[in-house]
Amino acid sequence: MSPAAILSSDLAQAAKELRDADQPFAFATIVRTVGTTAAKPGAKALLSEDGAIIHGWLGGGCTRGAVKRAAVVALRTGTPQLISIAPEELLAQRGISAGDDVDGTTFASNGCPSKGTVDIFIEPCLPMAQLVVLGASPVALALTDLAPQFHWGTTSMLTKKEMQEQVVVIATQGRGDLDALKQALSQKRNYISFVGSTKKFHVLAEKLEAEGYALEQIDQVKAPAGLNIGAVTPEEIALSILAELVSLRRPVVKPNDG
Image (tube, rainbow, N blue to C red):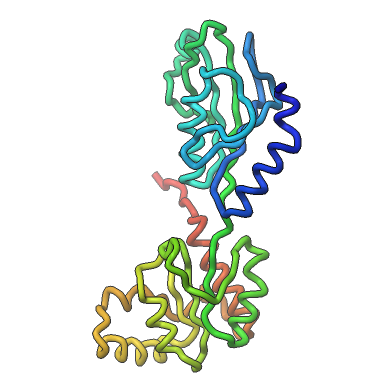
């Protein structure tokens, strides 16, 4: 089968199946070649979570090790990777070693006899992050409506599957607050927040402690939920919570003052 045939509907269908199954994967695209190479610019492949090629074609085995390493990094960090696989003597001429990162490009050595150079862009495709919203309050409804616009999948159910990957917002607002907190604290999670005042949560925290919950467990809860943006309406409170979630997902790297 030619590369052109592989890159059509088969690739798109495979990507759709992986998305529907909430499986992480990566797209790899050859963006530039120099010299003799088996694959040419435009060749694409789908890579699994461990970097193996699932569908598509990127040429011979000379690129596979570098592609695998870059795919694993891309999926672990959620950051696209650009790799340049070039003959070792060419890298040496440029004063570059395999593994070096120069201006956003990671270099790898091509040991194949063809001595060509292949530049490959690898883009991670991660499952939509899951936001569990507990409660049926106006804030809960606003959050459920708004979250998908920020690439969060929403549910009202806590599951045993990948619990630590779920983030939980308790927006019960007086209806089952304590029970919802107990559900959320059933296992350590990346983020738990409570819609309510600090004073209200303090009262609930004392009840949890009296029932045997450790302070370490209770301290998982961020209260009040969201960033302090002066939010008043349910929609504004939902926005403040999503702003906080974005800041956690994409932390700002401050420049080095030195």
